[in-house]
Image 1 (tube, rainbow, N blue to C red):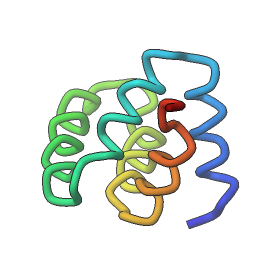
Image 2: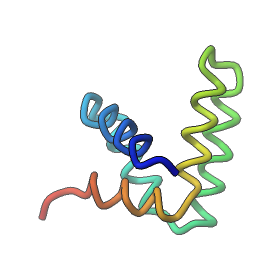
Image 3: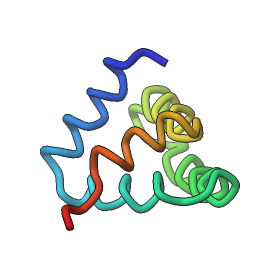
Image 4: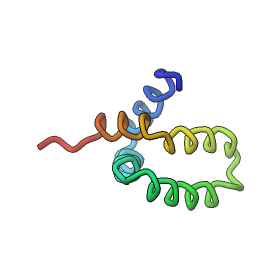
Length: 78
């Protein structure tokens, strides 16, 4: 996984509190539960105009190392 890809995800989250909140919650889930949640997200995004790019992002979020890095970066202070 290209570290710049994770940085891009975090930049998007920094611009949108709603996306940050969802990413924080999904990335904090255990791997099996996160995978199931991402299956639902993928199904919802199937008809989206940018489905290919969004599928790539969802695939990255399935990885434990990526999810851990994003969860740590987006952790609520305190």
